[in-house]
Length: 327
Image (cartoon, rainbow, N blue to C red; front, side):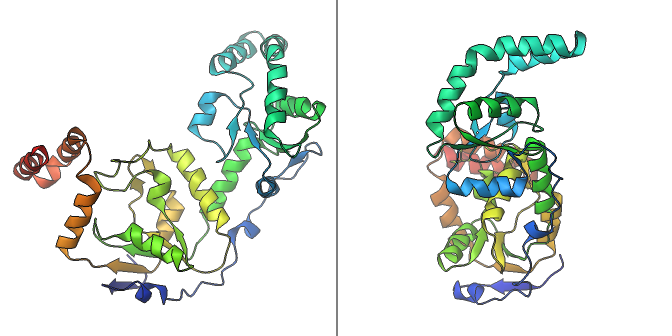
């Protein structure tokens, strides 16, 4: 690993005193190219769309439930124009019978839902303004925008839809962020250190919190279900996007995989070439911390976790550890 390495044992003020040479680096949003806006006047590019959320305007995703579950803009409410089954029916008609038959079926499906959509939109938009998107900023978002506008809501549609948002996310996460990486063995308290740094006024990024996984073989214990990798990237982007400040960003050392999700390769490569602070904690202290974290977990969950690393630690040590769990 390139970059400076520091061995640190003890007080947090040793970390907080470090100044990163790239602290005045320009924010990546200023260098990202946006698609030319050739759409209607209520269609706006990604960055302006994201800024509009600051006013508390509701964000509506009109894609199908399965599309939304796979990945969506954090904070969005799913108001699907079509259910998954309905979308499949319309798509099949389009392929086999053509656009007119598909459009006619779409009207049959959507028509009975229009009143409910309008009521939901009005109930969400306290300021009579609403933001919405579909996959590419096409028929689904245009149809819902027409309905909301007719209902008296000022409506802004994301130019290029969720697809353009994802492109923006990838470009943003490829930026050479000024990270300072906090490393150390499992149980060293790296997450607690990040939390303390935030209290001291520093900027920190908690990857394990975003991934809903602590990173080790026991990392899923006590955590909610992990997001998809796509949604993890969206959450990561949103967290960094809100940290639009100059200065170093403290981040925990992680492999490219955190449980079942993966860090974007450019961001992980950047971490490998940033300054690394290694936290040294006595073995006994690490054991105490890990026992506090995991001893109240379900015994079956702990046993299955140990069985997954049997090839790494050996059959004898695995059986011995499982015996301690069962006591």
